[in-house]
Length: 195
Image 1 (tube, rainbow, N blue to C red):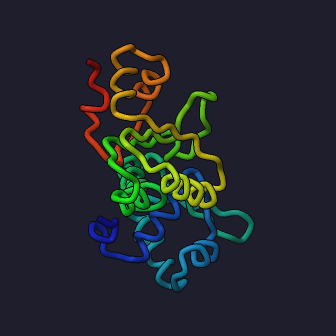
Image 2 (cartoon, helix red, strand yellow; image 1 turned 180 degrees about the vertical axis):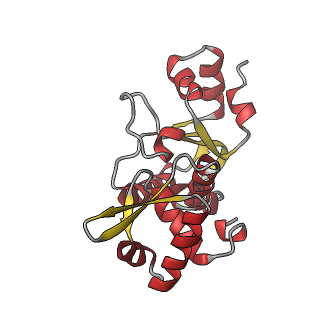
Image 3 (cartoon, rainbow, N blue to C red; image 1 turned 60 degrees about the vertical axis):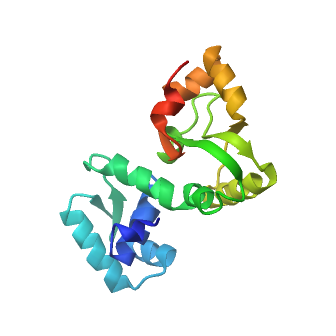
């Protein structure tokens, strides 16, 4: 399962991953070329197509053009979710699912995917429910922290602990369930359904 299966332009996929992995950031054309490793003409062509489609905004600064992904683009949040699942930690978890143990739910916080700061010390970026091989998970999380250049706050629970805390209406679990989320593994309805 890759974004390339849906979007056939390899350059556009790389550009979507760049822009949506850094929400709110703007990039100069040569910076985009360096970061995605593609030819400048291909990048300019895709920038033009994406701008006409309403995905990108451009801004002149001195003698340079900078591009940023428009948050008012109608499919912004859906693309953000797709990129979250098909690149970075989401992709790594899906790719190494068998090595990570028996995962029932893997949920990423919407704030984390949008690049927003946590509201408090109890905010969690990633919730993983199941029987997890912690050393394997730890390696994937460390790699993501290096990529994102920020620390991840993640919580691992067994299915029994999660179900118990949901039944008891545990404030931590309720706060996690009340926030926006992207499901990497599992059914969202089953995750939020309170017993």
